[in-house]
Each structure stands twice: as structure tokens, then as C-alpha cells.
Image 1 (cartoon, rainbow, N blue to C red):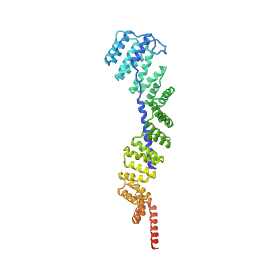
Image 2 (image 1 turned 180 degrees about the vertical axis):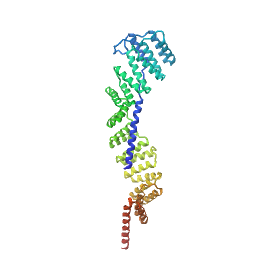
Image 3 (image 1 turned 90 degrees about the vertical axis):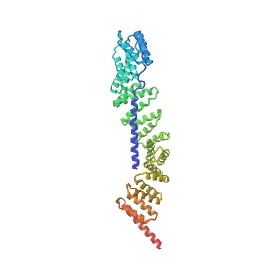
Length: 451
């Protein structure tokens, strides 16, 4: 029973560790598709600028300044330099544009700065990329669509540099001006709030993102579910975590989710479902680590299915996944014993005892031999236990030894063993009863012989 309780505690700690580790990975995958290509944005911006229209047709609050053809040609030259991997040449062209005799209007400057940002991002020069996007936002007559996109790109770059506070602030500014916030934007905001430990707002926004995907018939991304699961776990809403894990297993069937589901059922004290989740992973061949297999076997024992526990451990040891240590062999022996497979239990317990530094396992094996009417082996095991030392209850070992000697009709040895057992007050009464019984039985036998 003590072993089972300890196994249960171990399984709970292991399952909790799995859950706590997962969301960090999800949150680190911050921004898919960080920056759209400058070419696309330049083409859209120029096309509308030449027509005197906004880059976002639905926004007609102001007209966009036209772009000079020479500026357009130089921007194209800079773009060609970037494509030829001549980054220095591209930056030189852009600097000439910014510092030329003719002052650029806001629409032209926005495009120049936008290409600046694109180049600096490609060089992983994030401070200068941030500076470029921040400058676009300050241009009063810049194309509205370009400014809106710059706000979003700026927020993303703050996330890349792990400045989550500024990233969240910039993203909230973007939400105020955009007409079509995306699920990915809500997810990005949620991840930033998670990093700032604003879990309530993070949960609110991850759920908006997930629901937006579901409404369109799309499957939410795996790491979105991961963050949602973690946030509910922090609230100790384990039933919701179970619900999310079942969704994950529907769309992303992985071992870790079966193990986490098993752990959640443990938190809900539903041992049967805890076992079912773990066994499902085992049947699918997903459990390939020693600790996983031992936890599987421990769950079978907790749910009183010792034969399956023995099968799991025996297979794991034979396939060299589980190391045949004294502790693991003892667990296997106890599993076979609980399943009434005594012939299988004894050799495993003997192996466990021979590898142990203590004689306690020999003392337990002594009991098994006695229960199986193998009295000679019982005596030998008790002797090994007492010689090796470290037996928690030597008085009990002497009692078992005495009973084995008695059944072998070795009465003097039995008497000696019972006398030693009687020296411990915990076994004295039982040892005295055996000595009294043995004396009475011997007298009865002598009387029968005389008759």
C-alpha cells in the first residue's frame, strides 16, 4: 500500500511537470510570418499613390500624397540591390534619397523608411528596424495603410527583442486603428500578456483567436491550444484542461498529450480515466522511456490490475528499456505476487534481493517462500536477510524462520528462532503462542507414539 501511494505521488509530480513545461514552448513561437515582403507593400503603396488614393481603399479619411517618378525609380534600384544581396548599395541609395536636395513628402519618406526597416530586419539589426517603423508612424501625411502596417510590424519587432511591455502597448495601438484584426494578432497579444503574467487578459485573447479560427471551420494552431491549456491549468480549472487536451488529441495526437490527460484525471481523482489515458498511449507504442513504463505499471497496480503491471515491467526489462535494478525487479516481483503468479514472482524477487544493499528484500522473499510451502528456501532466505543486515523488522524474520523450521520438523531450530523473535515486544505475544503450540503438539505426538 505504501509503495502504491508513493507511486501515485510520483505520477502526479511527473504529470504536473509535463504541463508546466509546455506553454513556455508555445509562447516562444511568437510571430509566424514576422514581416511581409517590402516588394508587395511597395507595389501596393505606389499604385495607390500614383492614383492619388489611399493604400487601404476602405479608409477614405485623407488623400495620399503622390510619389515622384524619380523617387520610385530609386526605390526600385534599391530593391534590385537587395535582391542582388548588395545590402550596402541599397542602404546608400536610401540614404541619398533621405538626404537629397529635394525634400521627400511623407508618402515617399514612408516608403523609404519601410525599405530601411525591411533591410535592417534582414540583417537582424532590430534596433534600427524598430527606429524606422517608429519614424513612419510619426509622419502625419503618410499613407494610412502603411502607417497601420508599420504599427503592427513595430509590435512584432518588440516581441522579437523580448520587450513584451512595448510590444503589447504597440499592438493595442494597432487594434485601435485597424478595421480587420486577425486571429493571429489576438494570439500575439495573448502571448505578450502571458509573458507579462497578465493571465486573465491572455486567456481572453487566446480564446478570441481560437474561436475566430473555429468559426471559419479552421483548426486552431497547436501552440494556441498549448497556451490556452496552460492558462486554465493556472486557474486550476482541470476539467477545462481535459476538454482542451481532448481537442488537441483529435487534431494533434501526440504522446505528451495522452500523458498530460492522464495527469489531469489524476488531479480530478478519476483513477480509472487516468489509467485509460495512459494505457491508450501504451497500446499505441508511445511509451518508450523507463519512467513512463514504470508509471504505467504503477497505475495498473493502483487500479488493482497487477497482471498487466507485471506484463509491462517484464516486457520493458526484456527489451532493455527498463533497467533491471533491485527496485525495478522488486516492483516486478510484487506485481506477479499480487497477480498470484508466485512462480514468476519468486525468481524476480530473488534477483532483486541479490542486488540490494539491504537484507530486507531477502526477508520479504522469505515470506513468499513460506506462503508457497517452500520451507527450506524460506529458511535460507531468512538466514541471508539476517546475515546481510538492514532488515527493518528482524523479529518478523525470526518468526517466519521459526515457522519454516517447524514445518520442516526442525523443532530445536524453530524454538531458537521463536525465542529471538520474542525479544521484541512487537512479536513477543505471537512468538509465545507459537512456542506454546509447538510444545503442546510435541507432547501430543509423544503421547501417540507411547500408545
